[in-house]
Image 1 (cartoon, rainbow, N blue to C red):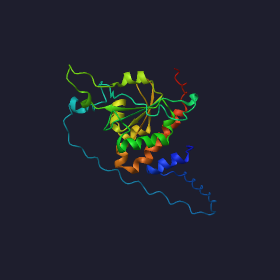
Image 2: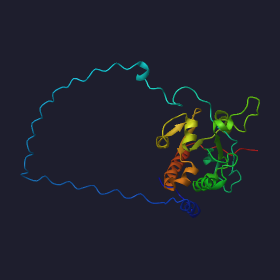
Image 3: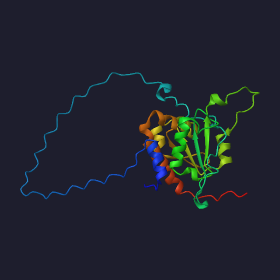
Image 4: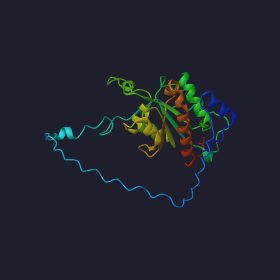
Length: 255
C-alpha cells in the first residue's frame, strides 16, 4: 500500500524515527535446468530399521475431573464490567481544510494515559498527535480521543458522585464512531474482552459489540520506551487508513 504524504507529513514521520522505504523487488525466479542425459539412477532406498520392542508404561491413576479441565483465564469466560471512558476530546474540530463530506470518517482513538483529561499532553501525547497528523486524521473534524480509566480510577464509595465520562457502550452510542483505534494491550483487552497477546490482537481487525470495526496498535508511552516499534505502529495505522477508505463517509453536521 502506498500513501501520498506531503513534505510536512514526511518530516513528522522522520522526527518520530520512522523511515519510509520502498519494498524491495522480488528476487528473480531460478531458471529450470535441463535434464542431463544419462543421469545416474538414485541410490536404492535403505531397508527400514527393525521395529523397536514395545515398552509397557507404568500405570498411573486417572486424573480427576477438576485437574483434567483447566480453569478459564480471567476475561475469557463470563461477563466483566464494561470499560469506562473519560470524556472524549475533539482536538481537530477547528482544523483547516477538512476532508470532503463524502470521505468524512468518525475516528475514535482509545488509550490509557497519565492525563486522562488531556491525552495529548506530555511527550507521549505529542507523539500521538504527530502520528495522527502524519496519517491525516487532523483533517477529520469528527476525530475523538478518549482515555480508558482503570477500575481503580472509577472505584468510589456508594454515595459518591460517579466519575466523569461514561461506560464504553454508552460512549459508543453517543459518539457513533465509524472506526475505533485501540492503543495498548490494556486498552485492547479491556475493550475487546480478550486475553490474547498484543501481537495477535494487532494482526486482526476486530468488531466491537455494536459492530464497529477496531484496529489495535502500540500505545505512545510504549513507543517512547521502544522506538524500534514505531514502524510497526505506523503499519497498524496505515492498515486502519485502508479500512477507513472502505467505509461510507458522513456528511458534515448541520447547524
